[in-house]
Image 1 (cartoon, rainbow, N blue to C red):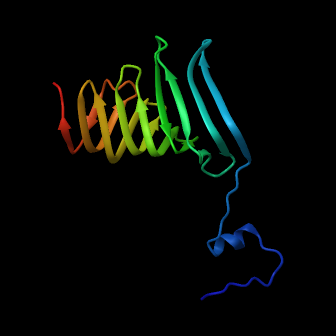
Image 2 (image 1 turned 90 degrees about the vertical axis):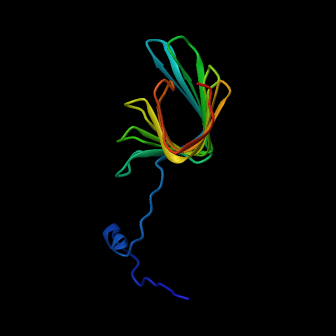
Image 3 (image 1 turned 45 degrees about the vertical axis):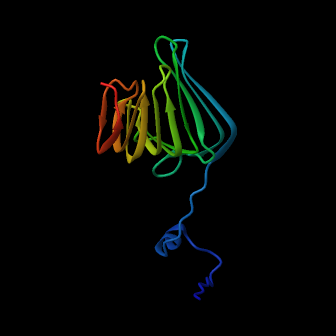
Length: 167
């Protein structure tokens, strides 16, 4: 068993960092988070989460959703697609969203993707993962490892797949 004792009552943050101990705390915490994103008066997305932690003053700013999130995304015609996960992080500088733990996307036209981890590039409107996934569409079931696709599933690139597909 090892013990570590500090004899001084004052330590600068640089001294603490020298021994490899850093702590990052949120500057804010929101419960029952409900955010509506609109553009030109139309709702584009609704993000709901039991809890959001705000780390936007960190060196690499982010927002954490430790209890997961539900995201409804609306297309130009008002069709709704749903994204759910049990954990998520939004990285502010890179505009990436990391979804993990039971990630499910269900589109308005019945497509469904299930995986344990998925990233979304907000700038390019592109999803990707290198984790195992299951994709269901119009009677086809595709299982694989690694997939990337556009937010509307019109462009889809899969790696290492197997399953039953309708062509």
